Image 1: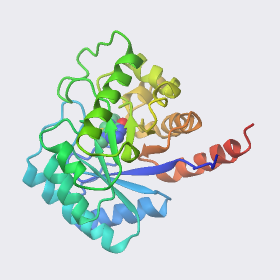
Image 2 (image 1 turned 45 degrees about the vertical axis):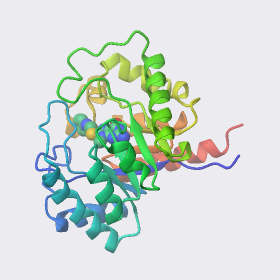
Image 3 (image 1 turned 120 degrees about the horizontal axis):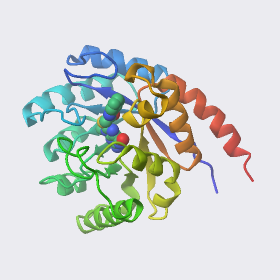
Image 4 (image 1 turned 30 degrees about the vertical axis):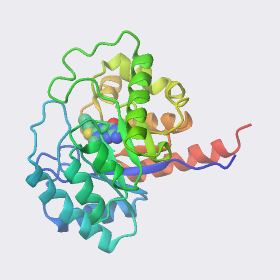
Length: 268
Ligand code: 8Y4
C-alpha cells in the first residue's frame, strides 16, 4: 500500500470576531496576506469560513457570509495554487464558493441544512461531514451519549447513506468526529485516543483539535498558549491514521508531521 502523508489544513477565518488569530480578515487584501502566510508555512488546504462556529456564536445572514468569503476565494485562487475548503453549512454558499474556486466543502452540519445535500451533489469536490450533537448555541450545555462511538458511527452511516441517495459518491466523503462539538472533555479525549474506531466506515478522517478547550483543559492554558499541546494532539491523530489536520499553527504542524511521516514510513 502506498503511503499518503496527512495534509495540513490552515484555518482562515473571515469573520469580525475571528478570535484565534487575533485579526479581522474582512477585506480580500487581508485574506490574501493570511493565505500567503499559511501557504508559506506549508499549508496544503486553506479552510475559509465566514461564519463563526464557536459555541454561542451569532448566526450570519447569507448575504453577509457570501460577501465575506466569495471575494476572498476569488482573490486567493487567482494568486495561489492551493486547495480551498469552504467552511459553510449553507447550500448557496457551497454553490457560489465552488464556482469561485473552492475545491472542498467543509460542513460542520454534515449537509443536514435545507438544500445542502443537493448543492453538494451538484459539485464534484470532496466533502467533509462533521459530527455535531445539537447546535453551536446549546451543544456544550449537556452532551449525552449512550455509547459515544456507536452513536457517532451511526450518525456517519446515516449521513453517508443520505449522500449516496443524493448522488454523492462515497469516494468524495471525509469524516470528522467534531472535537468540541457537543462532547464533554472526556468524550473529546476518548475520540482523540480511539480514531481507529471511526475508520472502519471507509472514508478518510479529518481532525480539528487546534487550540480547542480539550487542549486548554489538559495543559491548563489559555487559547494563545495551546500551540504545543495542539500540535502533539494533531500528530497523535495523524499517527492513528487521520488524513487531514485542521490547524491554526501550520509551520509547527508541518515540522511535527515530517517527523511523524518519517517514522510512519519505517513501520513494520
Ligand atoms: C479555540 C480555537 C477554541 C478554535 C475553539 C476553536 C472544526 C471545523 C471548526 C473541526 C471541521 C474551532 C469549522 C471551531 N472546528 N471543521 N470548524 N472540524 N471539519 N474552535 O473540528 O476551531 S471551528
